[in-house]
Image (cartoon, rainbow, N blue to C red):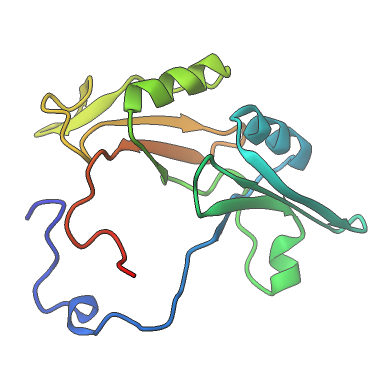
Length: 168
């Protein structure tokens, strides 16, 4: 099965696509030091959308990567405020950022002082150095971590596969 296949007969495949808009807008990134994390994400060149504090127990900082429709929030007291379990700082793994040029994205981040892996693609035995030999869309990657260890995966997408773009 290729990475673009879906399992036949799976519940997700059998259910009709919902008619109500549900847009993934914000992902929580757990951090240990809000000010340090704020400086890191500002250093990436991401747009600062909010920095709101309610006393000493609650603070939310929200950033949006360039041209993204999904933001990240970080802060303190977020879990308690919304009645959910606390996530450990650094526990958010493999957050994916889609880029149109993996090498340009890597160069931009390293130029901002971020420790980014070399570009790689996947082969039979796992990671292979360098971009996908055919520069196939969805085939080239690089990774980086924030100061707490939350990990980010850059993935080069130049052409979306059929069915991967919402119509209307």
